[in-house]
Length: 126
Image (cartoon, rainbow, N blue to C red):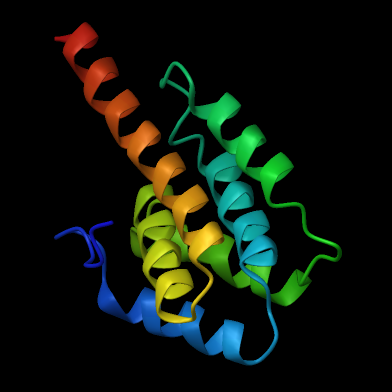
């Protein structure tokens, strides 16, 4: 697995997610915030498989509880230009750094699928 961030992903996001996980917030709870951001911004609406990818990620990584403050903060990052793909990329690396390899792999697969879907959708529009 590639263990570095994509060029467009701010490094501070990974640090933030690592700190959250060290304080007991699960990657599953962070995923809820990312899905909330994607839903509120509609940034993935034009992509063919985006909703299915995110639904599958929620099924594979169910959260036992919602960290409302974390979800609210993550969804507020859209105002700073942070995208769903950036958040997934940062979460993948944070999971890897924290030794949560299975979660890192699931997030990585979702990230790659959404990234490919964005490219395909752009090609179809052009």
